Length: 495
Image (cartoon, rainbow, N blue to C red; front, side, top):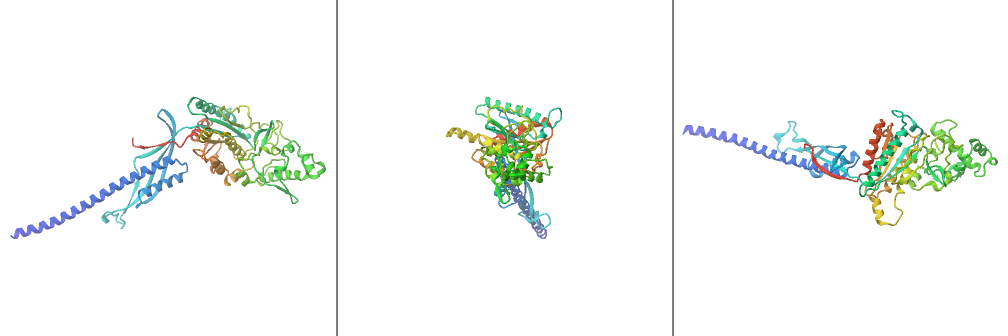
């Protein structure tokens, strides 16, 4: 009996210890099951977020990051989501027999959970744990091609005549590769059902050049502030810049001094405003006393230009001086004469004929951008044909700016116009299309990505330092601009 009592006491201890072990195992099993469940929830949340950002396919990193966070927080409402980052990569691959451009997405994030049992704490008194939101999923959005209206907005300033890695000039390379790409794009449209690409071409230096009344004119699409002389207001557009362009600076000075010396098309007041325009130009640019250009920022009405960007100024014929092979007498080099002979080409299913165009002068990308957008708008069918309009709104719309240098001589006008909403207003005009207007920029041997105006305007900027890469980069941007919203697929990245 005594031994039995001793064994009974030992059994109670063994049972008690076993219960502790069994309880611990039960707790571990419960917590382990919860951890597996939470891990699966994390995987599901990451997959949903990855596919969502791929379908949205937004180029703005912050927008994609916020979208991924929103999905994770809705999927895991009682869990603290830490840092969220969307990893975006681009490339090309063959899919279903077609070589397609794609954008690949993965979602990375941290999530903090509360442990159910205090014995699992990290010793600091905290019963929470942080895990990576991750799985083996990635999503790709394949961009499907569509009919395209493409307008090149090409820098034809004097620096385009610089040599570029060989005997060719930057202009030679640009002409050659635009021709190659145009021929390829238009031939693909001719051989594939449903394709009907159109191409336009707008060269620019300080102005664009257009034919008005069968004369090649140096065209401005800006709106202007009035000038004031002795409390008398003179509208900029009231001045006959076309006729003054033919006159010498001496004639201008004599007219500004004495009304009796003025030519029949002008008054002394107008001549004095012209002199003031040139004076403001020299002040803003820092160029010498012989510099005479129109369009100083002081006289540019930024807000009105943005508001009326699609109202062409070509109907006001007196605004636009005539191009002259020998250069205009009044204006300094950089516009309206000498070697800068080119003209805009409207949208067509034929490759733009640009081989004989020549570059010279300054750089004013805003003139090219506005005129290029007008050319793109002019591609809308001017008929009451519902089928034609429906097909038009299905077309991709693209402006491709090619630039080799900073604005010169007016360095602030472009950024001021962009800050005032020029690019947004242009995009808004195309809001009824199936996809937004795409604005791409290629810096030709130049860091366009370092320019604030380009950064705040373009969907994408690519800087090209090697002439051999220019063709590939132009094609890359065109492929993006011509693509529809695409098809998104979820993949296991371990396979």
